[in-house]
Length: 280
Figure: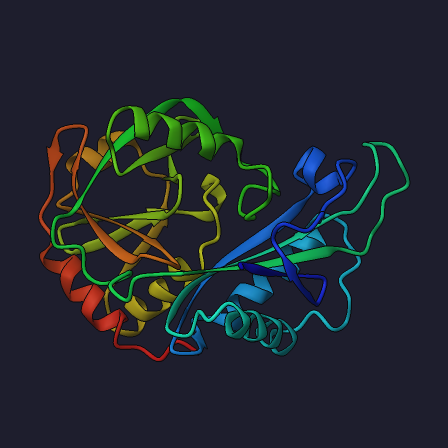
């Protein structure tokens, strides 16, 4: 029987969990984190929990003082043990607001749910084949104070993912409200041109990815220049290499986008050096 953690208590997933009046359910009033655990080590746990707390603060929650990395890793490890997810596992930590309509006096204390799923040990390994991406042009992401959060209102990415599925793409590139490159439905995006690495600036509306942050730091420490800037579809078409990053799949190279083919020489080297880092 699959179990989850609801506000610090391990319960069955078949239990009645969330009220239909929950603002998290009704309005997407909350944030979430997706993490990976390998051999009882949650990768970049501090960064994930700090991002969660920052998101809750932006959304006007009163963050409990016990919401620390130590607290949540303890809760996660207890659930991993109960679910017997002892090797490689995906973790989702969702924090949300309790009952209320849009103009009710808001409940400032967040609720949280932790879920875990077993993964194949091969997840996050180098993708030999390369991804095929397309571009979603009819749904645009805003560039505002919420755009960098992993908040529970995921509709632009849902629509982009639906488009990718209909076209047999691995993922879809999302554009911002100015028609520039933002991210993909599940990842941050990087391009390489003349051995220089580029990625959309946070002001362009992309999620403030944990792997994105740590990879940029790693590249700078290894004297590889990274430029965060406005990127256009034409920039993607002119790139030598293209790759995407997220916490589950790590770094994945892209072989094709809208018919444009890419190589992966520097991307492969970046992947190998980054995955050799300690992750705590």
